[in-house]
Length: 449
Image 1 (cartoon, rainbow, N blue to C red):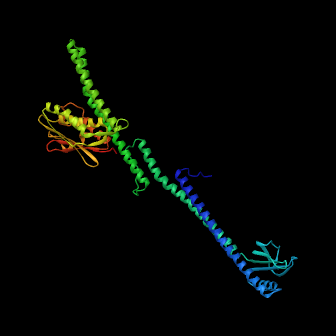
Image 2 (cartoon, one colour; image 1 turned 180 degrees about the horizontal axis):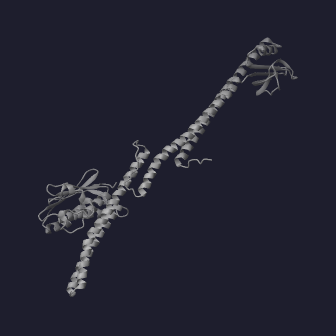
Image 3 (cartoon, rainbow, N blue to C red; image 1 turned 30 degrees about the horizontal axis):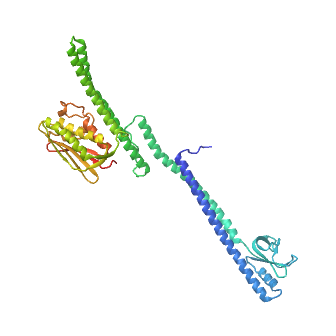
């Protein structure tokens, strides 16, 4: 025996086809019985009307009138009415023969035709004044025709509906199976290493297309993260190779020579400084990873952003003056947002450090804070040499360092951390031309999304 499809799509399609078929069966049965009951009611109403007319006419004729009327009515040819008048002893006085005398009231009984055949009849039985029995009935031919025609037609229609439902279940199962199979094959290819593959899109805009688009966006995001991971791994190896080689060289020279205690102390101090520099590198990488991961690191709370900005401006005022930089501020009062205080402070500090580190003496540096109904806008600007337009997106990547910054200390992670903090708060950061110099514009929503 062939095995039925075991897919969920087939089971759902078969279930709904079965439910639809059963509903059609229930509706058809209800309609059949309603029509049958209506025909039966009309049949009984004819019998009641005929009986009333016979009794009224017999009452007008007097003694023997009922027997005469029944005899005349029973002699009428091609009539679907049936009549019988039986005396108290059970002898037929007029009308059709009956197989048995029913009890008074409605009943299904058999009349005997002249040919001797039996005729099924819906009849009403009542007692006469002399103790006899009056039986008046009607031939239920309309009901029999209904049974003879409707039931076979209904059976055929029910069979067709069942066949269509089964065929529809297979067709629907096949259609869903093809769509899901294409997605499954693409997923298998991606698992097998073909990371460039993407889920197929038919262009109909249906649920499967929307699912495929969502999965493709997820795959693009994963591919970007993998590329970033490869880039970070290579950048870490590249940035650590030189300081580790220098550290090893200095330690080897200190051990190989006949250096005195002060020389050894100097070599050890230099080794410690280089170790601290590498530890700072790893700390910056961990900070970016923690911020991008979210979780318990980014805890939001109401923050007086204007107060925080003024505090940081006060802290950097003296540092800027000592470094021969002109420092200015334009901070709107009373601006509050829901954010993480430590991370926002780190964002501003990184931008200010970046401005102090990469501008020459005498450069003007400014910090500004404005707000509108939905967001706040934080800007750190300078009048330094600026950044070429081709490098303005690259400066936010990890370990990104421009040629003009190779001689300054750092690892190229400060602006990457700024971008990560802005994203963690549902905001953005962009670099604008300050003519001359640059402006880092950070936009944060008043409430995180």
